[in-house]
Amino acid sequence: MLRSVLIVILGLAAVSVASCSTANVHKPAPPPFVGRATTLEVTHGIKVLTNVGMPNGFAPIPTRPPIWLEEGEEIGVVGTQAGHTIMYGLGGAAWRSGRILAAETGPAAAEEGTIADLAASPNGLTLATAMVAPDGNRVDVIIRDLIATGAGSVIASFNGRYDSISMNWLNNATIALALRRHPEPLESGLNDEAPKSDPDQPDVEAPPNRADGLQLIVVTGAGSVAPLKFSCPMSALSWSTHGVYAVGQGDTGAQPVILDRRNSTCIKFHVPTPIHVLDWDQDDEGSFLYVGPDASRRTIGVFKYNIATGAENLTGVSTGAAAFTGSSNTITLGNQKLTFKMAIERPEAMLLAQVAISRPEQSELDMRSLGFDTMPEMLAQSTMEYSRAADEAAMQVYAPSLPVAWRKIVTYSLKYDSAFLLAEGPARGAVTMSWSLKGRWLAFLDGDATAGTVMTVLVPPR
Image (tube, rainbow, N blue to C red; front, side):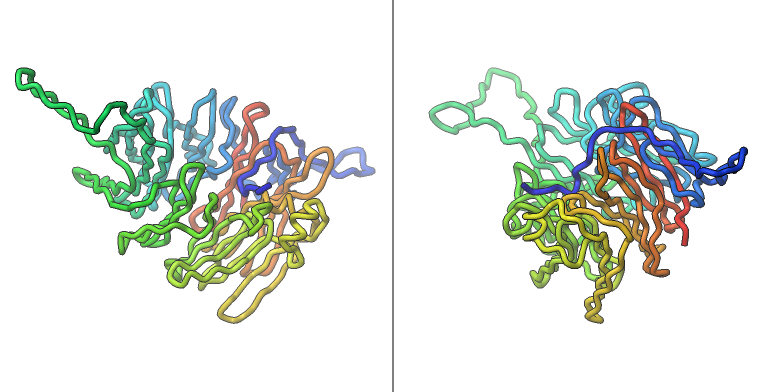
């Protein structure tokens, strides 16, 4: 069975900061920079800038890491609470002052409905929300200026029901909204002729056309909407660095596709099942990393694909963690000896967790050990966040343990060729993480709705 990179091990247990035993009557106090999260214990000696408890009932969404806004002055956290999606903004001293940035209901909501997608502009000053109306027959795009007051305002509306809604900012002024309209039932009748109008009846304004496909929304000035014609059905898009290409990652109703905005073309990707794009090469506009199935569709791997040439290379087996590091170089979590056959036939085999640093232009592949064992089925659930500014990867990796697997948050610095264990604990609940803009700090959300959720910001050692 295909193992998804987005699998999250459910459940939760609180973890206390451990103390070292001593023969003295008075035990030494722990360092002042020891932090606690809901399931994770931060390693002693690592400086914690803040621990912020989220409101009761809040739970992280595994695919939504913290968002650094306003040059790091505020951190946006997305989760669920009381059955609704909500986004909080944490700012002020130690990011401890909270406000609601987007909500589906209540006085802080620009309008009531269901949040289909959220995206912050590249400069972190504007938030866009795609909101589905309560009756499901309209999608509104809400724009909020984060340095101003107010819940925001609707800048564009699209009538109809949609099976896929996704948003990306192409620049600070333009949003790419991908819509896939829900198919309408065929009308009964002997022919498809439109009904003739009655000259004795007053004219009735026709309903607005329902949008479908890719819409470019300009948010500056008076604003505008320009539909782009692509023949393929839309799914959640991942855009290249300069917005030339996009990959529709596929879902149950649409196959993965590649969009070329420059030539207005859309072609089916050679993988017919959904994929997950991890990263785009900043030095080669058409090259990206994705997680997809192996040939048997019984496990997964990370592949590097080049749109211009169609070349594809395997970078990791049974893993969901990889990124570009610059000049088409990559870093991938995995194990050098692991094959697809081994991952399928021996998913619980013990193997060493390693990172592979690939430099194709120099024909170099360096392997570095992280110092602990894992399993193929656990590697398949791993994640990675890479900071180009710091040249450092933060990884969520799992290790065998009873009664539940053990979660480790590990960083690897390419600049200093060193790895550090930042935090660890039982793999219960969800953990999401992201780097600050300059790579100085790492923020992660940890928890679930039952035991609570904590946001931690720390300074990785270097």
